[in-house]
Length: 386
Ligand SMILES: *Cc1c(COP(=O)(O)O)cnc(C)c1O
Image (cartoon, rainbow, N blue to C red):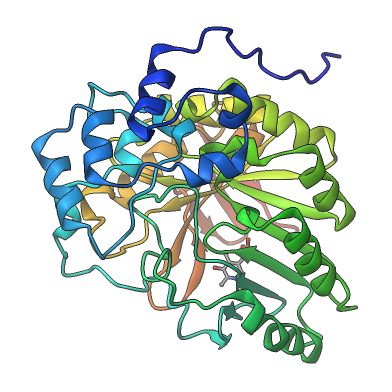
């Protein structure tokens, strides 16, 4: 077995990294570059900084001007290094640099497409399904995806600090003995310090009927420096599952591989969630590369989401017909582990609804006609003695 080793830091950093430090007015220091606090403090967010970082196209320049006060822009220096400065269709750049189309509000767009406010039982706690809840712990992310389903909340300071909300949340969990699964999301809960996370997880774990705790996080792809041995110790102690958000194989860098190795070697079960995005990952080739890449890192693709109809995201959404075609191009053609469930989070609070390419093509008198991945039709007969 190969041991986990840190990616070798180049003695002479790439020109790009030096450029980024110059834009930040910082001298390059590998120790600081690898420190997640430094990365968070030096995120690029101002239009002038992005203007220096990238050869912006007019649509991006207008997008940066228009998004002020709407969805924040922030790019960690680590992520900045991965953005193609010359190609505006770079899949990472399209996810974090706004376009002027963000100002378009399509007739079907919604501020809160998944209806989370409606199912909110105490501030920042959504209880929709019978046995599990979603806890919105923090409203900050390392970088802001332009298609964020919680653009109404993130980076707006509207959620309120967890300190003021936690007692009510814990009281709700204690009173609701049917809740056995707590999903902590945000924002990005891995942006809490190790100590704060330990305290939060400890309080949730102290609720006797909570059997499972999971965290949804984007830091592994946007800020892999956050995954430190001491964080892994905290996550392991509380027996946490992680759902990591990835959109494109270009996100699977040596730093990300190292972070996933630390987590997997630390015994943390890893799943991933991917949003289907037009022009970013809407082809079998791109999705397969991503899902195969994740499996190599011991991350099991869990959900592929149809992009929620959030205000200002119609330029990034594709059709469900396209999504079904992509899933059909994966299922059976590659490892079942590489095929996540394709779901639509039903607008209006219906929750996640799985959608599948048609496989049951006939069902009469106990005889089922099944279409397989190659298009062949097979028969299955129900038992007769039921
Ligand atoms: C996604 C989600 C969950 C978890 O759903 P699973 O299908 O169990 O992963 C729970 N609550 C809410 C409100 C959600 O959106």
